[in-house]
Length: 153
Image (cartoon, rainbow, N blue to C red; front, side):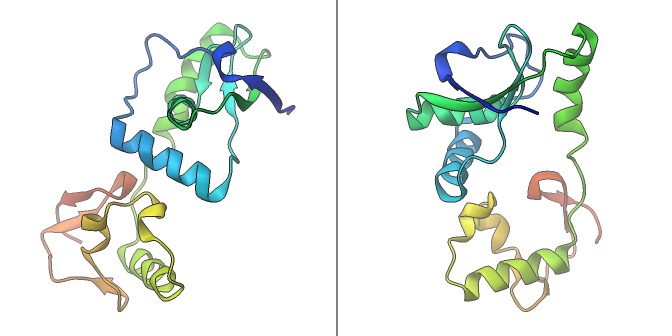
């Protein structure tokens, strides 16, 4: 895999992207890029249309970045490009382990780290007992992207 550094304006968003990135999420992605650096290149097709990384592209625009890391996946067929756009977001969905998540939040809190840089909102973080378990709220469980979902733990 070769990473190239291209002007942001040379890459283009896919016009029919099936995943939305709300302004708040783009701000979180931008904050993560600033804090941790850029470690996931934008993946584009041979025409420089984004396959993976629409949120990172939008965050780069918000940050005013002129150059971004890009991988050109010119080896994919048109069908693979379309499928990769969907799979990139779908296969990342999973459940969270609430007790482990609470321990991680607690450790970061003890290190005086800004917990919002984890991508979680303060309201989501506060739902966890920093002593290692879930706060008394048995009607919720933690689901994909850290959302608190109705259900039983």
